[in-house]
Length: 255
Image 1 (cartoon, one colour):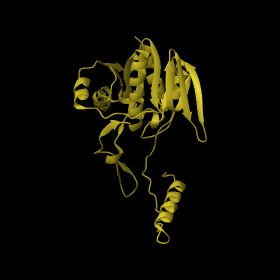
Image 2 (cartoon, helix red, strand yellow; image 1 turned 60 degrees about the horizontal axis):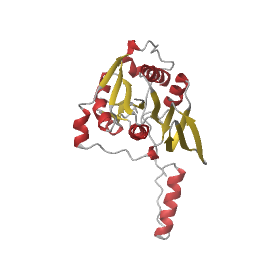
Image 3 (cartoon, one colour; image 1 turned 60 degrees about the vertical axis):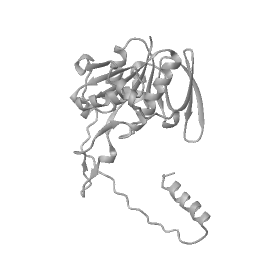
Image 4 (cartoon, one colour; image 1 turned 90 degrees about the vertical axis):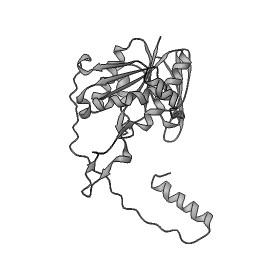
């Protein structure tokens, strides 16, 4: 039975992050969570597995804390979980992450489709899917807002800056999806209980035989302090104020 894989990342919950007066980041009390965008990738993999008659699998790469993600991921529908375990993951850059995920995918027999989010909710680097595809030498389709699978052909609608592009690729392939691809469900109690009984494979880093030395090194992370313009809309009719407010929000990239 062919596997449809959803790659996901365990990230710090941004709601728990504190920014100190010197703009340094305090994550000591921060909990972890599955990246918000990755939840859509997981749902896309589950739906694709149903169409292809395959088996969905959640794949993640991280340190000991990442083990906590497996039950949550499996409660969202995948039949199996796989965790690449290494303490080196904390220092990993996009190149190392892609190498680790691609190596694990190669160890899993008969994979027809790999899903990633367009970007993770912490860095949104948008590199994972293209890098995995390059390593595996598979076609890659990014920025996917809609897809259809017939036999071994995937038709995807890509949402670009100023247009929609429809492309077709033969499987196996790597796809990165946008949040609008689906509505990722919130797992119910039954799904959470069932997740604890699903099989999970732990892959030790040394089993992959790859170099985990990053090509980039993060030297500092600082918070961003934005000075609000404090624009007051006090004149004119209510409808005009709403239009003006919407215009300002679009200008600042909020809408």
